[in-house]
Image (cartoon, rainbow, N blue to C red; front, side, top):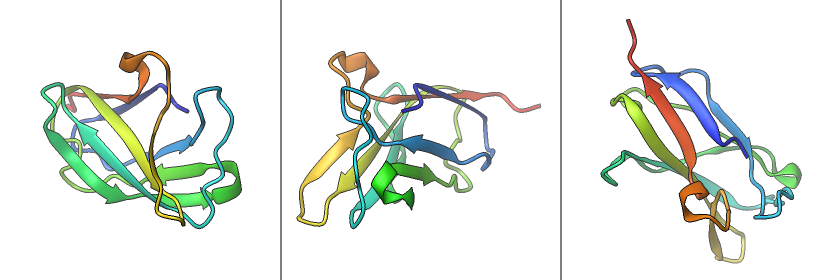
Length: 113
């Protein structure tokens, strides 16, 4: 899964595309699941609160979040994660890592000119 993603403030492209992986780096099959994306700033305030993501290839765990206007409204380091709701109702958040500081996708939002 992508560890760092760089985007300019207020941009809506490119999409954030990742492979959902377990803590050992193996793709997690997510066919039949629903996937959501959340993004917080360093104060824990939501910039994106549980918005639908797109499953490109469920067997390979390939998902993407298509940024919407206003999603990247702050400059700085932001924390992203995907929430998977499996067909049987189980939920799990990704990325997975034994180190708590690596349990998020780091989104770096830079100032636009």
